[in-house]
Length: 117
Image (tube, rainbow, N blue to C red; front, side, top):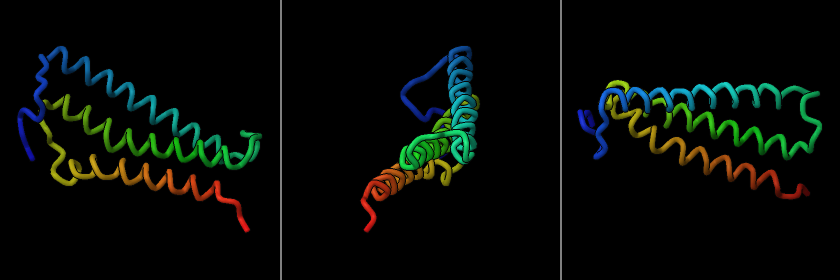
């Protein structure tokens, strides 16, 4: 899957680096924000809300982290190098993991909504 032109969109060097900087800023803000949310949600005193709401917020943060790591970061790396250099495994993981992880988080949140007997 190595290609020098992996999409129909071609950028000039300045546009590519500007776009990569924007994407890396999004990755860093997602990484920092989601990590702070997860650390804060595990503190006993931080959230004084229903436990179910805390669990849903944690699932959203974890899904966003998975998306940032497996979608946003490889996209930024491919913009910086102007080709796909991460190999076939990361290419497949970039597509499969965010989808399956989001479905799992949705299923788990639906299970947590079920009344316990």
